[in-house]
Length: 302
Image (cartoon, rainbow, N blue to C red):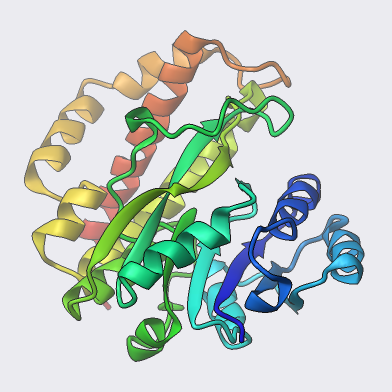
């Protein structure tokens, strides 16, 4: 009987995916107790070759789905439609699970069978230089449902209709699921022993414009989240509340974004940003987010 499905989606991350699948296939539970369901969301690199290599080696059930690039919500639903585990364990393609990862999710689920199990994550800059697998509070995330490391009964996801595919750009599709599960009374617990390493490299100078595009896309999906969930939780999480909107409107009037740009200099080259530049880049991304969020929230509804 398949007790758990590891479900992940990937897009143009062949090198990372190779390590992630290796870890997924080295679990301490029996091979007939879990499966891997992987969705390739239209990758254009060597991802298909990586998938085929590991599928040939897999001793557990391994299902690979390929679709044109359509975003995480649609990819997650494509994976869910092929899953057969009683509990779905979500990770991302930049997450390296420990060998006892599935075992710990199932251990927690035995005690809390109907709940969301939120696992722990340790941020790392490389999969080649990993710290000891000891979770600490500095890596805590308060997200109710965060697909970096979370599990939930498949039946609970089916009851809410899975992921909302109107979230076609980056961000918030998992938070939407968490809010809908919460509204149905599905409670969550935090179980840090279900542990992963989360790849979070320091940004490079030539990645700034991508960071800004992603922030603007995240703002547009934030507006979608608030439209679906107009209560305080979504407004606090997204920043779409009077206090944060007023603060960032003031920063725009004072042209703080220009100051952050000057600190960064020309956004070119492969050099890693130093600490001061990193702070400026993150501040600039935040301003891009709030500027786009304000534009979308003020736009007339069609």
